[in-house]
Length: 116
Length: 114
Image (cartoon, rainbow over all chains, first blue to last red; front, side, top):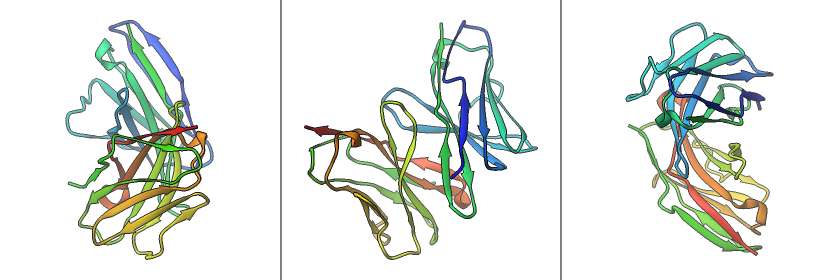
């Protein structure tokens, strides 16, 4: 399957600042990537679908202006948490979808965001 | 909307024994995939096993196998000869909307007792 690299693995930021998380598909050209959020002891909640060269598709209830997604190339998608607040503290995971051949989804290692 | 339900928040099993984790899903599609993922304390999502709905044969990967009941929309995971390294959160998942968005169940926390 694809190899997905996600950075940073953890970040602490001050309230009001912005944080960018990168998701790279190292060996697969990903036209579609997904961003998830996971609270402690809970499941993964899909935030948005990142589409290469076009606007991201956000799930209901996810603030587009808060969580900016850019998918400018086939190997890189970024999630920027803007004007972060303590309630944005969470674990964020990206995923790459392989639609052909070895069908499946590969996940990044996740980013733990703490807003203080 | 497609949903995935895992009704067992926690399960425990003795080392070397067998445990089955339950999953049901709802879909109107006829051809699709189903997945089980493992999330250990590192929080890295690891694919355990995959089932293609058009295949009647249940998927098997070493000690892991599924019991896929398409009519009942049931997709349980059986772990044989449980090992301490199997301790993790297990998520059942289904790709909805034309096999794109992956929807997860609530998860089952599996504890292995030595």
